[in-house]
Image 1: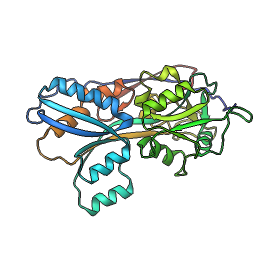
Image 2: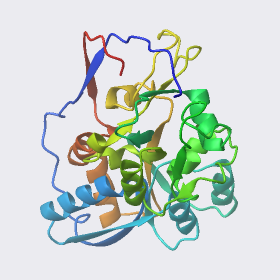
Image 3: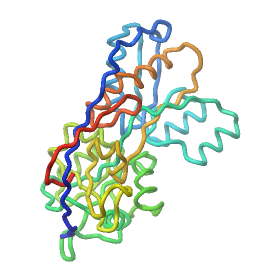
Image 4: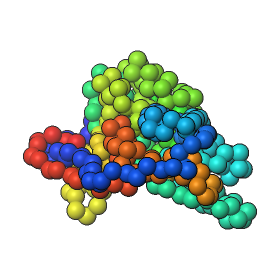
Amino acid sequence: MIMSRIVPFTAVLVFVLLSSGCEERKLVSTTTGSLRVECDESVVNVMRLIADSFQMSYTESNIRIVPVSGREAITNFINDSVRVIVSGRAFNDEELAVLKKYNIEYKSFKCAFDAVAVIGHKDNSQKRLRLGEVDSIFDGSVTRWGRKGPLIDVAIGDLNSSVNEVFKRKILKNKPFTLTATKFESSDSLVKYVASNPNAIGIVGLNWLRGNAEKLTVFALGAPNWRPDSTQPYGIYYTPVQAHVYRNYYPIARPVFMYSREYGFTIADGFIAYVTHTHGQQKFLNEGLVPATQPVRLVETTSNQVH
């Protein structure tokens, strides 16, 4: 069994979204018509909830949220086959170069903070993993749970997914995933696979833990010689709870962006405003992500548990 030193952590953080204290002004010309949004599959559930809420408030609107891989959404956006997208990562250098080369004008909105959760079967006795262990498991250097334990069953999503791309950059340092990894087209199927296979380990966005966390082990990540910043001691292991994502203590945190090529008073502007203001931000909070545009407050209490 892979073992990690347990280091006590003395804080529980309660995440609170602060209301702006005033009602949003009702939009007029930006709340009617139809809009197709290609959405990074890793955050599609929360975006559909926000779209449903928008349409209930503005009955002459029709928002269609279409799930695709993160890279597919960005490629289609650059090719102008879709005007508004949601991405679990920012444009990379290559994509920015293409946008600049062809003078493509766009607007960028940071709407939430998410993270890549490392998950296992609920009966996995290992609850913490060193960052080096995570690296070695997913690149194939370590293949068993312990020296003589069962083979580790690695599960990853679509190779074009933002979850894979962020994980590969932050943890694998751009090394390839192990060739033995089982690949899944959707986060839903990956979560179900890991939940039903005792030796499995996988990676998903936080939104897919909603309603599934009790079926899984969500690993705490850290290392004896690692700390997130100079204010924290070495050796603490962090789970992707909202407070740790907000303070960037969890090592695989990431922003969620909306990008638009629409200008003027269109339904795209109305929907983006809804996503980035109180109603949409509250939905992100409720679904386990962190609001990006609203004030937040962290309340600290005393605990002997590692978070």
